[in-house]
Length: 166
Image 1: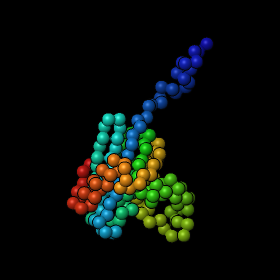
Image 2: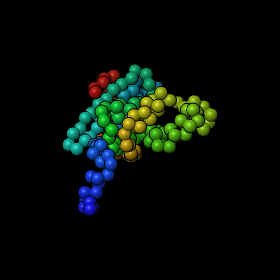
Image 3: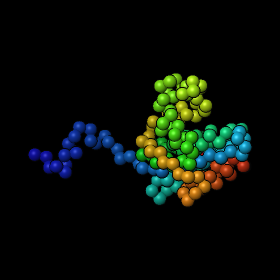
Image 4: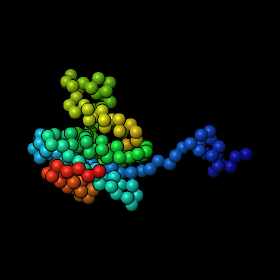
C-alpha cells in the first residue's frame, strides 16, 4: 500500500515536472510627441533579484513602446515561468487579455473590419506570452507603484536620450 503523502511520487511522469520560477515583470513606455522619439522599460523581479532594461526608437508611438516593453521583458526570460506582468497601459492589458484571441480568429481584423494596428508587435507579444504562464495586472500610472514609477523614469530617459540598456 502506498502512503498518501508519497502517492504523488508514484504517478507516471512525476519526475519530469519542474518547479516553475515565479517572476514579476513591470513595464512602461514613453513617447516625446506621438509619434516621436520613444522609449520603453522593463523591470524583472525574481526573489531578491532585480534587472532593469530599456530601449528606444527614433520615430514611434506610445502604444508601440508599451508593447515593446512587455515583449522585451518576457524575451529576457530564458525558461518557462509564472509571470505577473504589471502594466499601466489599458491598451496592452485589454489587447492581450481580450482582443488578441478574437483578432487571431478573424485573421487580424478588428471588429470595425480594419487591419489591426501594431499587428507585428501584437504577434510578437502573443508569441512571448505563449512561452509562459502570464497573469496581467493593471496599475495606475504615475501613482504609488514604486517599480512602475521607476519603469516610467527609465522609459522617459530612453526616449529623451535615445539610449538602450539590456
